[in-house]
Each structure stands twice: as C-alpha cells, then as structure tokens.
Amino acid sequence: MRSSGSYVTSSTSGEAVQAFVPYPLPPRDPVLAPESFAELNRVAELALARLSGVSGLVPSVDWLLYSAIRKEALLTSQIEGTQATLTDLFDEEAGFAVRNTDDVEEVTNYLRAFRLVQDNLRDPAGLPISIRLLCDAHALLLDGARGAGKQPGALRRSQNWIGGTRPGNAVFVPPPADHVAGLLADMERFIHSEPSPALPPLVKIALVHAQFETIHPFLDGNGRIGRLLIAALIEHWALLSEPLMYLSGYLKQHQAEYYRRLSSVRTDGDWEGWVSFFLEGVASAATDAERGIIAIATLVAADRRRLLEAPKVGPASYRLFELLPLMPRFTIERVRQKLDTTFPTATAAVKTLEDLGIVTELTGQKTNRSFSYQPYIALLTG
Ligand SMILES: Nc1ncnc2c1ncn2[C@@H]1O[C@H](COP(=O)(O)OP(=O)(O)OP(=O)(O)O)[C@@H](O)[C@H]1O
Ligand SMILES: [Mg+2]
Image 1 (cartoon, rainbow, N blue to C red):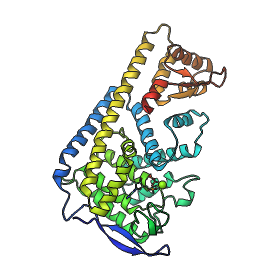
Image 2: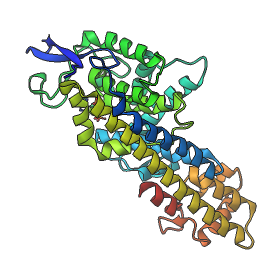
Image 3: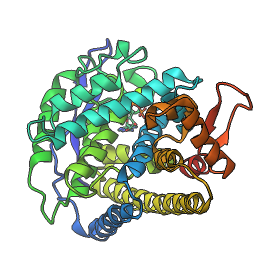
Image 4: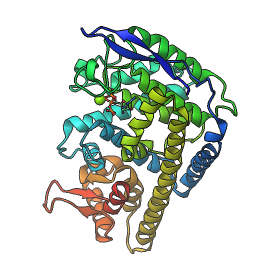
C-alpha cells in the first residue's frame, strides 16, 4: 500500500500527539494509476467544454455568472454551516432587510475573496497562484466579526485538529505549524509544474485540493479557501472560460463521502479514490449547471417574447427586463437608479412587467414596495 505522508510528534498543546505530514505531490510509490482516472477525466473535461458552449444560449454571460458565482459562494459557506439562502443574498443586494446578517456577510466575504483571486490571475501584472495570494484571499474571507479571532490573512502559528475537542482525541491532526510554510511552498511548485498526460489539469486540481486540506494552513476557513482554489484553477487553466460551475453543491450533497475520501488519502494512501470522486463531482456539477442554464435561457426567452408581443410597452420596460437576471429582487427606487430615469417612468416600467405577470410585488403595501422575478429565483433555488 502507498503511504502519502509520515507522522511526527507534536506537543504544542500540552499533550504529545501524532501529527500527519504529507509527502510532496504528486503521489508516488506507486504513481497515480492512469487507468483509474483516464475515462472519468475525459467525461469531466467534456462536461466542462459543453458548459462553456451552452452559455452562448443567453445574450450575456454576466447573467449566468451572477447566479453561478453566488450559488458557489452560498454552497461553499453552507458546507461550513452558514444558514444564509440565495434569496437572502439577492435581498441584501436589493437593500431589503435581511435576517441572517452575519451569515450573509460570510457569503459576501467569499465573493470578495474569489474576485480578488480572479482579478489577480487575469491580470498579467497580478499575483500568480501563490501562498501570498491565498493569504490575501483569506484576509477577505475572514474579514468581520466572525473571523476576527481566527488570524485572517495569516498562516496558523499553532497546532490545529479536525474532529474532537482537543488534538488528543481528534480525527485528524494536521502538520505542526512550523511545517506549514514549507509544505505550501511544495504545493505551489506542484501547481506551477507542467501538466502531462500522466497528470492532466483536473487531476492536478484534485490532488491540490486534498493536499491543501491535509496541510490545513489556517485556523479557520480551510474548506472554503481550498474550494476557492478549485474554482480559480479551473478557470486559470482554461477548463472553463468563466466560473459557471458550482462544485460545492456536489460536495455538500456528498459531504460525508467528501470528508471520508480526504481521510483515506491520509490513512490508506488512496489517492485514486479521491481523484475518482472529484472527477465524478466535476462531471455531475457541470452537467447540472448546463441544465440550469438551459432552463434559465428558456424562461427568459419566453418572458421576453411575451413582453415583445404586448401592446403599448415603453422603452424603460424593455430595458428593465434585460436587467432582471442581474437584479432579480428590487425596489422602484433601485430601478430608477439603474435606468437613470424619473420615478414615474420607473414605476410605469415595473407596472408593465407586473401586469404581464413577469414580476410580482411582495409586500402587499402601497408604499415601499418590493418586487421579485420569482420564476427565475425559483429556478436558481430549486
Ligand atoms: N477528515 C478530513 N481530512 C482532511 N480534510 C478534511 C477532513 N474533514 C474535513 N476536511 C476539510 O476541512 C474543511 C473544514 O476546515 P475549516 O473549518 O478550517 O474550513 P471552513 O472553510 O471554515 O469550513 P468548512 O467545511 O467547515 O468549510 C472541510 O471543508 C474539508 O475541506
Ligand atoms: Mg470552519
């Protein structure tokens, strides 16, 4: 059986425990068995290529990105335990009162962290994938009340553990703090090594995610930064032109297996099992996203046709309709601002869409009314 690391005694927290120190990537003795991933990798790459293509069904890829990025942000935070919903997120952006303020902050922090990484990787003068960039992302992720005590932006300086109340009864004790920087530097080197048929890009991403979780370099937020790294590398390595997939949905749905497969890499050297699980997840998540895009494109096309066929529709109504996918919940004031128009014109534009049954009013009041593009939200949350 292959070993994926060794144990060292760590006694930082008063009792001596066996901490796991992973070997640098890639797996060896033996190397990763190509027949274990070749077919799954082909299927996953194909599903991603189809997903890139299907985004052409809508006039603006921004429509799809708006919801896909938010779904990933939400689902990755839900794995962590946040209770926020997609509607909370839309409401917060609409300026409505939101129940789970702290949870929504956690999700918007993820959005900021992801954007930072994306901006850097897209900018030739930006930071490459590096420990520095991950620390900068971590600082944004843990910004605010909840992360304050968790050393945002910094690699941990103490021994941590997963499961259990103390290192002595933990499921897993990650490497001692003084190993973390060196292990991440090894990981960074692996990321920048040339892909080869023996290690295609998606397989490399799978290896990197598991290695990152095993190193567990931060006091908190390791799951979310590790999953952010997946999304960032999929785009950076051109497997998908835009982040249209939300893999965290699959990982959340198979959370027990997700954690078990990560553990088996450590306990049984089972890299093949983890890589297969990961590739199946990518294929499944990409196919789901493709289906979602087709449903959105169908809905928006049908509603647009209704609008175009309706009599006496003013230009502001057409313009408002095209904004809905980026603003599925809104007030009249927000419409007025977005369309840069007068209050009466904004009110009339909203009324046209309401009369056509495209948007609905939520409060039942005469003033401070809130509107929603409900069938669209139903598709995204369904
Ligand atoms: N047995 C395990 N072995 C290795 N990694 C694990 C194991 N169980 C969980 N993990 C990883 O650790 C993450 C949790 O670590 P941490 O709490 O630092 O991250 P987080 O982003 O705050 O939360 P999380 O799940 O809780 O997203 C999990 O998401 C998963 O990626
Ligand atoms: Mg956590």
